[in-house]
Structure formats: C-alpha cells, structure tokens
Length: 570
Image (tube, rainbow, N blue to C red; front, side, top):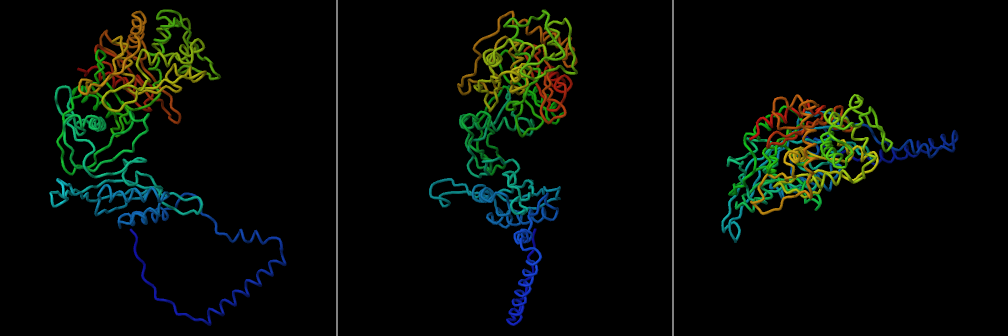
C-alpha cells in the first residue's frame, strides 16, 4: 500500500531575500514581454496557449496503474469509503457501494492484498469478517440475541483508466470491483434470509446440490426464490447478493438473489423437481468438455425437464439464453411451408446457390446447390435458399404466428418453476423476415426452447416444459392455441427422421433406432470466427437440444452432446 513521507522542518523565512526575488522576477518578466513584443506583437494569445499545461493522454503507464490501485485499495482497507471513492471514475456510486459493505453487509476487519498487475488491470484478494447480531426476541440484546461471526474472503480486480478532461488516472468504477458477481443495482446484504432455504430433490427423492451438480446452482437459487416461503422452511441469517428489482417485463429473466455465506442455518423446506439423476449426471459430464455448451432434456409426452447443464454455471444459458438458433429453426419454418402448400416432402423444391430478397443476397454453406431436388433433400442437407426462396409468398407475421400458435414460443408465458426465456420470433419484413426463416435475423432461442420444438414434433402437441409440477403451487402452464394436422405432422416427422438417417445429423444419430429425428444448425454471430453450433432431436419419449457457442457445425459440436442425452435418458 502507500507509505507516509517524513515530515520536513519548516524553512527559515528571509524577508529580504523574498523582496529581492520578487523584484527580480518583475524585472525579468517585464523585459521578456517587451523584447517579445518587438519581434511579434500579434502572438500574445499563442504564447498563453503554449503556457497552458498539456493534458496527458494515452493508456496509463505501469506506475500510474500501480499508484491508482494503491491509493484506492489503501483507502478502502483503512475504512474511508469517501476517500477511496475519490480515486474512482464515479465517486458517488463507489462511495455508496463501499459504505454499504460495512452498513449493509456488516463486513469488518477488511484487508485488501493486490496481486500482479496485468496491463491496466490489478487483481486483488479481500479478506474480512462478517459480524452480525441476530435478535431473538423483543427488547434487543437483553431479551436474547446471538452474535454471529464468520470469515469471508474472495478475489476481485480493478482496471485503471485515464480521465479525458485532466488526464488523471483513476479506478474505473464497476460494481464488480466490490465483488465480482455484483451487477448494476445489486447490493451485498447480511441479515435474515429473504427466502427460507430449500432442499431441492430429484424425481427419485435424492437431494440436488450445486456441489454435486454445478449447473444446478442458479436453478436451486431460482427454486428457493419462488418456493422458499411456500415449502414450509424457516429463514436463517446469510450474506447474499440482493439483486436490483427488475422491470416488470424483465422479471421472468432476472437473476435470483444469491447466497454467498451462511451465518446461521434456517430450516429448509423440500421442493421436488422433475430432474432425473442419471440424465443430470450425463448432462454435467457432456458440457464439461466444452467452454460454452448448454443442453436440456425434456419428456415429450409430459413436458417434464429431466436435465439441464451449462459449461458456465454462473448463468443458466440453457433456460435463459437468447441466441439465434440457426437452421434448427427450419423445423418451425417447414411446418409453416407444409401447411401453406409451399412445400411437400417429396415434391420438387428449388435450392439455388443464391437467392436475393429485400436487397440481401443469401447463399448456402459452401455455396452448394441442388438441381431437381425434393424438399426432403433440401431439409436434410439444410439448404438455406430452399427456405429463403419462399419469403416473397409469406406475410411478415406468418412465422411469428406459427411459432406462437403451434409451438407455444414467444408469448412470454411459460411457468417452468424458475426464470426462463420463452423464445422470440418478432414480426419482421423484407430481408430480416427472410433471415428469420433460417433462424437468423431477430429470432432468439435457447436449448430449452429448441428441445421443446423437437418434443412438440414427437408428441404432436405442445406441452410446456416444467421443472416443478404445477400440482405443487397450482400454477397454470402455457398452452398452444392449435396443433398441426395429422398429415403435416407426419411430414414433419419424416423430414427430421430423414435428416437423422441420410442428412447432416447422421453421425450423432447413428444406431439410435427408428423412432427418432433430428435437425442441425449453425448460427452466424457478428464478431465470431466460428458460428454457434446447434442440434435438436428426439428419440422415443425423450427430446434434447444443445448449443455450443463458437462450436462450428452443429452436427460436430452440439450433436455428440445430444446423442449422449438420448442414450442416457430415463
């Protein structure tokens, strides 16, 4: 941290010297001005500008980064939030957050140890003690209270930035400086738990824990938030991240509060889920092989969610992700074209190299084309132009209505038991509408949505996926307003089955029997070298979908994950 400098002895005052120095200064300045004026009487303003100190620009130097970090961390450790905040880019927000550590989180004995600088970033380690007095009756401590205390340590980091107006190097203020999991509006709070703890159990009654199943950490947090008070438990005392209250239209996708440290245990209530322990174990194993993979398994006949896993457990992308689904969207688009008579399984269907619509030129992967081919062949090899070519014959809202009415998507009304994103197929026009037909444009999905699509094709009816039975709390599950005709449904199943035995999904689906179907997808994302790989499929009474971000072709990246889910499902 910083060190205090030695105190200097006061200088002796010499009034004669001061007077002489001042007179000399006046003489020199006067002579200088007169001489300069003789040479260029019109340059006074330029001289003043040159005399103005220049503002330093460019990235902070190593010394500046260390100094900024040292000042901030030293003031924080010393318990002076106002002083520490003054060394940041947003003093008001920083002061409020740092003050809250003592006032709301009850952190004491804070010690901050900086690590090795990396460019403008400085990691640091925080050790502290959470001290809280739990009141157990009226009348304060005399009536009964317990002093609770536990150590609390974590790692975080800061980044130094240069302020534009004066060039000063400061700590770039972000909530994550205080704690790495804090976002705008979040707070660290110690006190009685907002919701009593729960004991989440699988369909067989076995306990589900984040230690055993890392991907279920956010799921268990979500179950606690929704069912903690209903399950009959009693609250304990904990240090938690209290999330910012989300806007009304964003509540379903909001992150739940998260417990960081338990000071006293409450009494948990039991919440039974539909999770299959064997499926969950297999899902955890599969996503561990990729950096950004997510997978979901559902039962088509009921909608029960049997397993969910993510490579990055901090965010449940499998339930709450919002990504372009690429060619897996062609399952929904195909149902639309079949219903409208714009395609037939064994009918001839165009698959040119290019097709232009709305001033956009669309093409197939590797610019292939199929001459005199059928729609079944175009679907199986995932021909983009076979779908784009039908855009001029569709209304702007045709795909939106199909997704909502048949597959239950995009209505923001799923109630699965924890927060989820229900997919989005916005009404678009021209090129964007055409792009939506192949899962690009404004279409957004996640593995839960796409597993549900495969499940709907298999069962013939949309069954809203759920993690907790509606019998537990009497909630109403979402329903689709209509089903596909028997003929269209049979055609759609044939398309997906043919893709699994003779198309892009052959390798992942090999040897899985006759009652199965699949669709691959690759979704281009701006700024990514490789597209996101998607795969959705069903086998018997199991349906699964996976995405591997930047995984490339879905059959190669997401396909093997789904294969294992279909093999291990029960």
